[in-house]
Length: 304
Length: 312
Image (cartoon, rainbow over all chains, first blue to last red; front, side, top):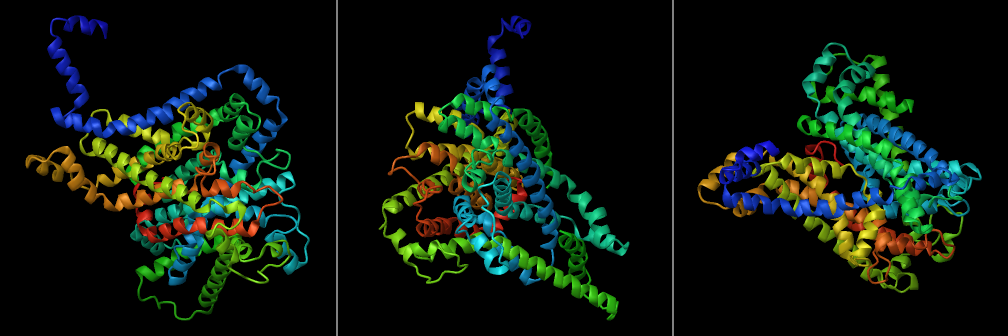
């Protein structure tokens, strides 16, 4: 860089011109100004509300002593277990069911269309409304679920939210209830995109039922399925609302996930740095996920 | 789940059957074929019933509790004993201490939703116009930056953003929330707009430029009108995103005047005095705008979603 400028010293005008050209590309004078003016609002938003908070967060969570404190906290340890379970179960059960159900919704007929309209309702209902309802529905004494169990089967249902694993399971089920319709619709669109001729050819060749699914459908939407699963993993990792509304982290702070523990540390314990540390401890999982996703999403755009 | 597997695997053939071979009577009334078709349909019905119960149970619960009077909430019935719309009246007329600012809060939610939608559309379309149509140099960098922002969970930036908003004295200010929602809605908007913009031929812009149109005129007269379907899809997406957001509203809005409906709603979530019938009525009213919007623009949203690949 330095040597290049030394050569150019006698020709500042040309140098400036060249650099201008490199920045503007094909655009001329006022057009470049317009293009710049159009893009500046987003760049400003990015720097003020993404880049600055990211750097600020990294700075807040940079002290090593924070992590010593964090890792020795038994609540954090159970949170890590919960988060792993939450990710493994919520993401995979949701995505496998969505994959299978997207096939179910390919069935012809008006009543399948009607069923699909009902099925996407949880996605359209705001999560606060849906989860407040589920929270009360799971009440051990007066909840609808236990009333139903008693009326139909004379079973005394448990206190769903008062026991760690039942509560965590309830949160996972609620997450699936809310998010599965969205992914089903996406995978359904992916299946629709498979050309009919391919399926027809396969059928002529004798591939039906399970074989058609394994040999035709699966290879063609495997890519989409994987991208969706990775994307869903990262969204589920950042899912604050489900656990907050369903279990509130209880009983006894045993059902927190990293997203809710960060907020709890920062605001209930009034220790923002410890909260940032809890979130930052997800970085070893976040960073590889982000890198893989960035690469996949860039190419997926072209494919779909 | 074995039922589902069977369903999925059989359906592919059924769908193909109906669409591709309009005259399928080649295997006339073989008993086994008829029986397996009958079984398939029966299994489909069972699965459909399971799905309907699973989907509607929490919604039924919401409606049921909202239709009950206060005392009946604490009972073991699975349907409302004396259904009445009284809870809705109480919410809409703000005649309970818990709901005395309901309309103000609803207005706040609405203001945030509408402003987020408009700003997301404006900033997103300007950015994608600059990158995709004017092909500004290093535009790909901005594309990647938006992709990166898209995969960062909003909740992970909550603590630093909260402190930043505090230092800007934007606590209890609706614009703090709008800024956050726009930040997390524009990346997806940019991605989808760029994808959709590829279907509009660049020659249109070029011939208009030869006729002396300025970039602003290109944007307003050619780009925006042709982008209308994508604008509708992303507008709906941005509104739903803002309407579903809770964490930032909960952290940043605490005064009665700035609070939004969900924040007010969740105040008594874990309290013994929670007026559940009023809370459920409020939850239902809060769900009406997004559900109406979603079903109105469902087909266009799906188009937008598939266009952008797999964005959520």
